[in-house]
Image (cartoon, rainbow over the protein chains, first blue to last red):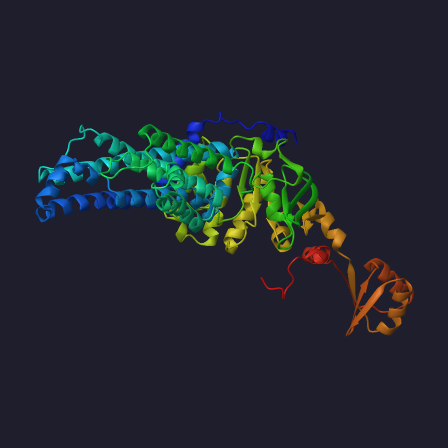
Length: 279
Length: 302
C-alpha cells in the first residue's frame, strides 16, 4: 500500500497561472465556428446600416433643396452618417447577445460543470472569460466603428461632403462607437451569469441595454437623469450635438464615466455570480 | 482517497443526501449504487465542489476539492456525457481543458488514442453517439493522469465491446493504485467491476462494504431438494425450523444448509435425488436492500 499512497501524495503540479485560463478561454471562444460568423455578420450589419445612410445622402443629394444642402455642409452633418442611431442599436443587440452567449452557452450545454471540475477556481475562470470577451469585442468595435467611418466618409466624398478623422468630434464618434461593443458585451455576460438561461438572458440584455433606455426621454428631469445612467444615452452624448436644445445637458466626461462604470460593474458581477451558487 | 463525512444536501424541503459517511480507498474500484433519484449525482457534484453541502464535509486526498486552483491533476471526472458543447471537435474540447491546467497538448492526442476516438478527433461532438461522448468524457477524466477518478453512469450508451473496455480500464486504473469511484443504478454493471460497494437509497447510506460482504448480507441461501418422498421429508424439515416451498417434485428450503438437509434425510432413510445450494444473486440482494427506498416505482413512469 505504501507505493499506492505515494501516488496520491506525489501529484506533481506546475504553478497555477491566470494566463493559462486566458489561453483556455481564448481557445474555447475560437474553437466554435459560430464565433467567427457572429462577429462577421454583426460587423457587416452595422457597417451596412451606416453605409446605407451615407449612400442615401449621396444618391438623393439633389432631391434636397438648396437650404438643406447648405445646412448639411455648414453643420458637418457628414459626421452624422459615420455612426447612425440604427447602427448603434444593431451593435448593442449583437454585442449584448454575443456576451450573453459566451456565458450561457456553457450553462445550456452543461459544459460549465466540466469547466469548473477542471478548474475549481471559478472566479479566475470567469475573469479570464471577461478579459477574452472584452478584448475580442473591443477589436470588433474598433473594426466596425473605423470601417463605418471610413466607408461613409468615402461615400460622401463623392459629393465633397466627407470629413477626415482629424475633424473636430470625428475621433470621438469612432472611439465611443467602438467601446459600445465591449461595454454591451460585458453587460450581456453579467446578465447571462445571473440568469443562466439562453433565451431569458438574451431578452434580458435587450431589455436592459435597449428597450428601457429607449423609453427614457431626456425632456423631463427624472427620466433624463435615469437616461444619463445608461450606455445608450452615454453613447448618444458622444455624437455630434443636435440642432435642438438639450434641456438637461451633461458633460461628455460624465458619459465616458457611465460607460466605464457599466463595464466595471458588469465584469465584477460576472465574476462574483459563480462564487456561491451551485453549478 | 475520498472521505465523505456526515454529508447532507437539502434543496428547500427536499433532502437529496442525508448524513452520508463513507470512505473510498485507493487501489480499488468502488461501485456507487442506488436507484434513480437516490442522490448519487448530487453526492458526486459535492465531491467536486460544484454543489455546496448543506452540512458535513467531503475531502479528496485530504483536502476539499474546491481548494485546488486547478483540478485535472487531482481528480478526473465524467459526470454526464452531455456536459460538453456540441459545436467543438473532440480535440478542441480536450485542448481547452488541457490548456487551463497547463497540460501539454500532446496528452490530448494520447488520451484520444486511449479511448479509441483518435479517428473522430476532428469531428464535431454534435455528431457523436452517446457511446462516443462517454468515451470522450472518459478521455477528459484521464487528461491530468489523476490519482482519483469519478464516473457517473459511465456505461450508459456503450456497446458490449465498449462495456468490456471500460471494465478493463477501471480495473487497470485501480491496479495502478488510483481511487476509482463509479456510480450505477444497475447491480449487474458493478458485479464484475467493483471490489467495494457504497449503496445508497433516498440519500441515506444502506451499505459500504466489499462486494462479497454485500452479497452475503442480502442473500438468503436456499436449497433445492429433489425427493420421491416429499411428504415424508417436509415435516422433518419444518421440525428443524426451515421454511419449505413445494414446487412439483422439488422442494425449496430456506433456513437450513444443504449438509444439514442431507444428514436429516440419511438419518430418516429418505431418498434424495437432488440437493443444490442456490445463492441469491447480487441483483436480488440489491433489490431487497433498496426496496424500501426506491423513489420511482414502475407505473410511476418517468
